Amino acid sequence: MINNKGFSYIEVMCALLLFSIAVSTILPALVTVQQERLTIRQERYIEEFLNKEIYDLKSNGNVEEELSIVNDGVEYQIHSVFSNGRTVICAYWEGGNGRYYERCLLGKKERGWNDSY
Image (cartoon, rainbow, N blue to C red; front, side, top):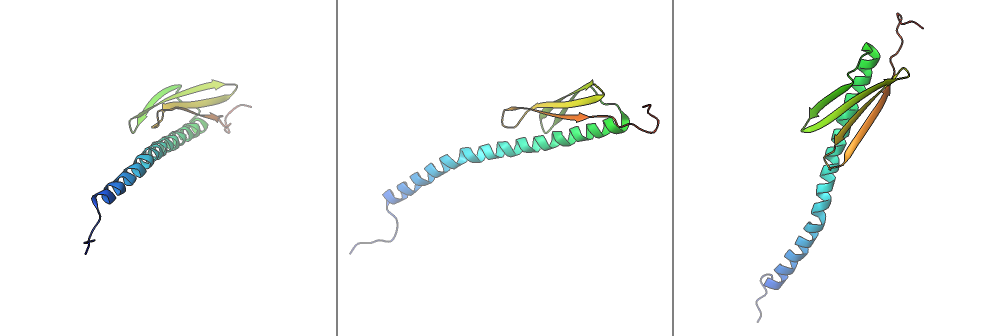
């Protein structure tokens, strides 16, 4: 009579081989997803910052021309250009995935009750 109480060595090795192949194909995709999530978080942060700068421009009428900010280890370069009564505020940074990004917003100071027409 044959004793069949467990898996043979060959069966265990085949299962481990299949598991390692599955993990080796899924792991790079998971790393890429995490990098993209980090980059999306960075984009949301800088868009919120640029919206705040545009709000400050509309309410105060002044915004810094050159600015460098650091958030979560990422350095953002902020540049503002004023032309034709409009201000363009752009942010440049290297994302968590190693690519370079640029986001720009257009702002215009709203005329108040004491501004001349």
